[in-house]
Length: 223
Ligand code: HEM
Image 1 (cartoon, rainbow, N blue to C red):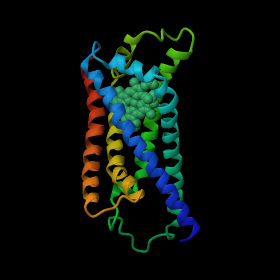
Image 2: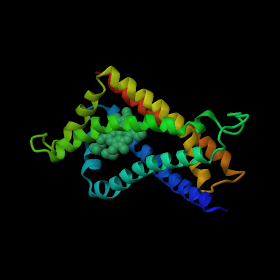
Image 3: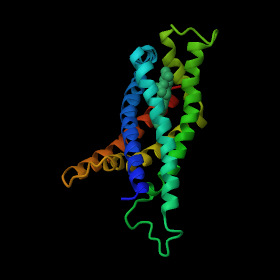
Image 4: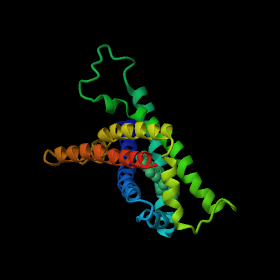
């Protein structure tokens, strides 16, 4: 085995581990945000306060999350460039559907849309929260009741809801390939379990984005 492929396999493995961590993050992130549809007096404020102020979440889970997100994107680009360079100049006869799906060949593009979404999303929520916490006069950080109204207000604008929903659909397509691919990359291949992993991946890639779309539309329609 050449050094090149060995390191590519290593990169793919590390990429898959970061993907698996992000798959877990999405379940947790969706669960917390789904609480927001219980209304302004529901458990969303308490849950958000816990996530924003608990030391384990803040100083252990969040740094790991930031690392995983950055690593996943950087490594995604690296692998894409390596793959392109490794491909024969141009396939004489290229049958794109031979053994790959359209989505698996375009992970980089769905990934770029998700990256753009994260830029907007960080501006919308994370920057807003940092202002509350760390900028004098930015707001009262002990005001637990602020989380729900702030989130609800974000979904008042049609353009933002449209962009979010488009991003969630692309997220679903990214996950449709990414879920099962991450298991394959860590070597989890088995005639009995691979079909099950694929089935769970399909449901995951539908239900998680659908949950996020539901939240966005719920807040938009209940303004
Ligand atoms: C309707 C859907 C969503 C809502 C309402 C939502 C809400 C939020 C909120 C309120 C925060 C700020 C948390 C804080 O710092 O206090 C946040 C942060 C974040 N969101 Fe989302 N989010 C949604 C979808 C997504 C999706 C689909 C992704 C990933 C593709 C994502 C990734 C992140 C990340 C990485 C952070 C920063 C880490 C953190 O603070 O926990 N979000 N989101």
